[in-house]
Length: 156
Image (cartoon, rainbow, N blue to C red):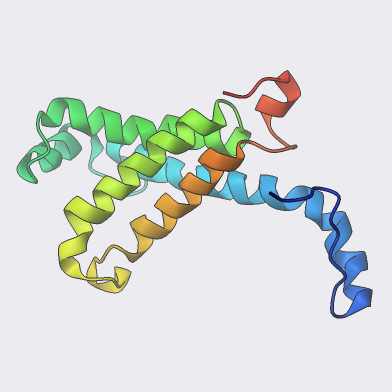
C-alpha cells in the first residue's frame, strides 16, 4: 500500500522545484493524452476522417478478419475509441471507458497483431499492448484530481 504523504527526496535536490509543482498535473496530462490519442482512431473508423475508410468499410474489414457480425463490431470498436477516448481525456466515467478501451486493445494485440511478432513496424503487438497496459492503469487509478469525475465527486 502506498503512502500518499510520502515525498521522495530527489537525487539532485534542486530538481524538486521543478518536479513538485508539476506533479499535480502529471496524471491528468497522461490520462488526457491517452484518451485524446484514441479519438482520431475512432474517427477514422466511424467517419472516415484522418485518412480512414468510414464505418461501412471498417465493418466489412472486421467481418473479413473474422470479427462477426461486422456491422456490430465496427461501430463498437470505433465508438469505444472515439467516445471512450473523449471520456478518458476529460475524465468522465473514466474507469469504464478505460476498461472498454483496454479490452479492445488486448483483443487487437492478440487477435490481429500477435502473429506479426512484437515490433509495431512489422504490424506487431507492441503498440496495442502498450496502450492496453496504459488503459489498465487508468482503469485502476481512475480520473485523478484533474477530472470531471473528481469535480462531480463521484467515480465509477
